Length: 523
Image (cartoon, rainbow, N blue to C red; front, side, top):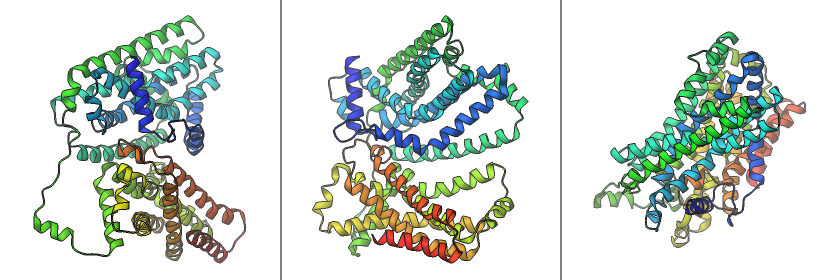
């Protein structure tokens, strides 16, 4: 086990993660920033738990197995994609297979790294519910101690189940062996599922009565019972906290630990049998054959900047990770806004009525501020250098000045940010915003888009993340993306808050917003 822990520690350090700097030391301030960024979601989870506790009364203990079960489902679903990406598609597979390591060493280390990353999901889904439950129930010190232990162990069973399924399927089928196609399809399915779950949950909460909620959670065929059957051991985790003040709590905790250990043992046993044969050749990718005629077309002369922008856009579309997190995100944000509005029971007329009551100057500031944030949230320019990785030397060999390369990378980001802004403005018109307000907002948003795109590139140029084994680390585990999003929030606040707090005429509000972002773009 010493080799397993040492290898896992090495993977976490070499992978970098978004919580470690170049020397491998943990950036303790980053979790604080994340906590602040997701504070509204955490608060909503806490308030939901408070309401459920009051609604259920004497049956409030049913919240605990529901919380552990829901968290396990999220971990299980996303775990399937994480397992395929980490255990089969990572660039370190061939290196590890050549080292004097047993199969269970590799599997155990990769499993531990996945468990560590699942703690982020737990921190935002499970922990707020347990804290809220502890506050409402007046829990003692043992409840807190058991909560800490359960937090560490909870992802194990669900992740082991998803890992076993993936290992067996990868051994006997071609599922996931086309790396590019799997990442495209898997990522899109994950996004669709997340949006669909949001719609279903909001509609269910709006339409279900308190009596129905109690029946769903406490009946013999309840959701709680379903979770307990799906994930063996979940009932022990819940009972550990329910009976935390007695010896039964400790006994249930021991049973949950045994269930988790059994799940890991089954995973390692099956992995020892099937993993290597399933992983053989899976890191290879297919390539299209092109003839001499095609070569002539692709090498036809064109302006340098245009050619480099075209190259950047092609790379964004060819990489599944970049496409899902950089390109597709430009169009997911507006869709999410529409889904959230109408899944909460709002009609177009109701939304239009709300918009008609907002001053035109404030509407311009809101639309432009939203455009600035959207342009900062697509991670294109804030990972433009990081995505080069160890091939960054190529940028110094080609006969293109660095200034032109940086301009081209910025322009690629601007193209997608501009598309996102246009979609946002079209949605605003559809929801009842005056056409002249929308056009004015669009013009000012161009300056906001330019400023946001260049700010992202500046952040990535200052501190690029080049040492990565998987492109996912360069994008999804890159602190520059988070800093860029926070910068976008600051820009949005700078546009909206003064117009909201200071009495401005429409003309003054438009002039202020335009001057702010034009000046920022020039700087």
